[in-house]
Image 1 (cartoon, rainbow, N blue to C red):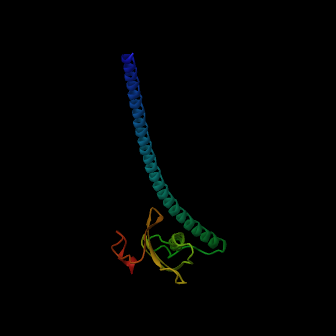
Image 2 (image 1 turned 90 degrees about the vertical axis):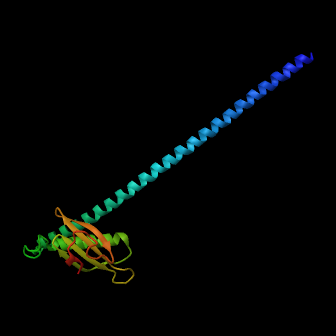
Length: 184
């Protein structure tokens, strides 16, 4: 009988060891699966961050396009008003490389729109503007002195004005291709 009890206990011990090994295997499988899930979550977070950056860039491009369209609308409204009042929008009688009063109005409007988008609480005003060929500079100020003014530099390509750079301390040579007279 003792031999039979010994075999029974041995069988019980083997079954317990097998069950223990199965439980350990299950724990390891669950731990590995949890680690994979964390890796998948981290990858998804990376994808979402990339998508967010792309959306931010797209938003900036759309804001720039909006500013250009607003400037175009302002120029067209001024042309319409001039036509309705019997005036003219012509600039310098054909000289000046195709730049007209509407070119000046357009770059001034674009500069003001950009400044207002950057600092909406400020009542920005144009201090001066200058067009040299297909390049333009618009200097804006805050008449209430709450913010520092800035210079906005534009280049006309294919009949469209594009903002090239803006800020303070920009000098000739900082913007490739811009004529030195623009910075005087």
